[in-house]
Amino acid sequence: MGKLSKSEIVFFFAFIVFICSIVLEMTIWNVSPDNQPGLFYYVLKMMRYLSYGVCLFKIFMDGLYRRSELLVWILVLGLLFLSFVGSMNKTMVLYLLFFIAGRGISMERTIRISVWIQSVILMITVGLSQIGLVEDYIMEPDIRPRHFLGFAWTTTGAILYFFILLEYIYLKKGRLKPAEYCVLLGIDCWFYHMTDSRMTFALSAVILTFFLIFGEYINKEKISVSFYQLFLAAPAMTGLFAVMLHAKYDSTNAVYARVNSLLSGRLRLGYQAIADYGVTLFGHPIEWIGFALGTAPDKAYNYVDCSYLQVMLEYGVVFLILIVLLYSLAIRKAIAKKRYDLCWILLFILIFSITEPRLADLAFNPFVLAGVLNIEMKAG
Image (cartoon, helix red, strand yellow):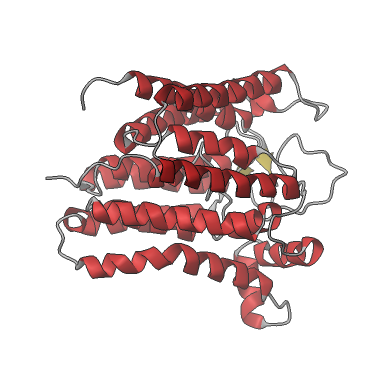
């Protein structure tokens, strides 16, 4: 792929530091007995701000921006600032630095770095938990045993593996060999056995099977480009479906009750969150409380797993629209580059985000950067 430029070295340094800080923050090492932030927490926070600072440095280092591009970034920054005022959460404003700094950076190199860093952290954390060097907390051991595998919550390892799968498939340009399929599916089954992460397991199995069967043909233009143009509407349609699924929840409806049960109460919690916080243009200050280790036991559970709903409630309708447009832009670029495997990967992420909060999580989901990165052409 050629030698790294100075600009890429700076960006990838920031990206690696960022991924490490976010993922390690979700491990057992960041959990203190008194549920108060410890030294490790502050070290990770410093790493995160270092990554933001390096991105800012790269932005000034690159220097030249077209006037139209500059106006777009200023508009987006203004809207994100309004969401910050509404939510009092600066995370997405800081994330914007990665989007601006990532313009023109190689998508393949970004995904390759992400898959390596995520895989190393996952293997070390899970491995140490299984040989007893770190705690493998087990939730409801006598009822529904769910291993945390060295993380602060039971599904974290399985979800991280889900995105590693997608990254691996992207690097393979959608083509999987039977041996690869068997190994990857076997690991997926192991995570399901240990964590009982049903949605993650099921969708991972579907994705692996899909690319095993169709991966060889996806990028060979056997399907009309007009078909893939339909994917442009997928972000908006999936987001609307997800929000309405929760907003229209009715506990007296047998179908809704069954779906809510299959989704471990997610629909009820989403419906209650809409009633409690309401829907606004620029969001609310919300503290999401889950069952992760380190959570204060006296706080009431209110966590919403649906990415679209969580984003809309905390950051507002305007920010959700920006995310939807970003995914549509990424799909449009993938079509232009004839990377139809990426179109499918983005579609699977959109579906996964109906029940999991990783739609805009850079540390887990680097594909959210696809709208600004330089996507390589299809395989020959």
